[in-house]
View 1 (cartoon, one colour):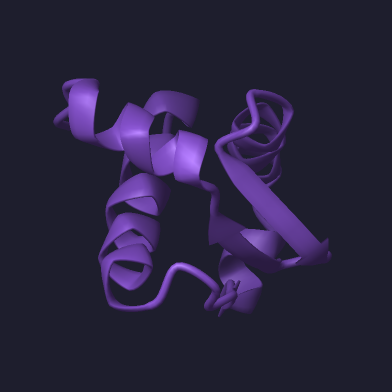
View 2: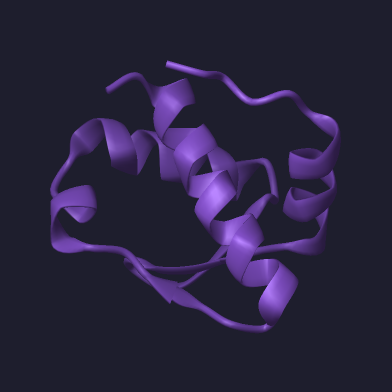
Length: 77
């Protein structure tokens, strides 16, 4: 998977959770944590301030990330 596709998938999942409870953290599955491209995608989202990581693999969308998700078109693969 490409980094942009992984980021889009993460944003969709996290935005859905954010709409239900903005404070909720999501635990990523092991296969995501084991993927180097997924870790790069997550690091980019975190560095841009779109995702907050409580501990490795436990993340939530920030309000900045949610706003970006709502205004930025998604990459469809």
